Amino acid sequence: MWGYFPNGIDIYFENVGGKMLDAVLMNMRVNGRIAACGMISQYNLEQPEGVHNLFCLVTKRIRMEGFLVFYYYHLYPKYLDMILPYIKEGKIEYVEDIAEGIESAPAALIGLFSGRNVGKQVVVIAHE
Image (cartoon, rainbow, N blue to C red):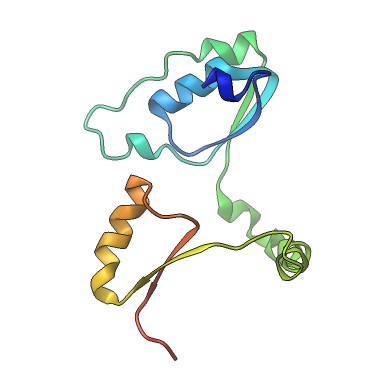
């Protein structure tokens, strides 16, 4: 991982956990920040993995804080006002991974947990 971040990682959005979080901690910069939103690699384990590099929080003075989206719902209208012009101007591309038909729903769901999809996963049941 170090080759991709020769100067270290300033900000990381954590939603994997386990070995990925361990690797990220080792590669964080001093005073880096981690927003922890999930730990999907741990959800279905009978015995969750421990995180072994937590001392990096101390030595690198890393700030790690939990993030739950529903605490920020009140900012959604402000976000839309900011982001929609960028999407309309083509400065930001909104990507959807569309699966057609209800029979595609199980595979689409499994794809979310295996990293198959790109962008927001949508299952189209019927076209209007």
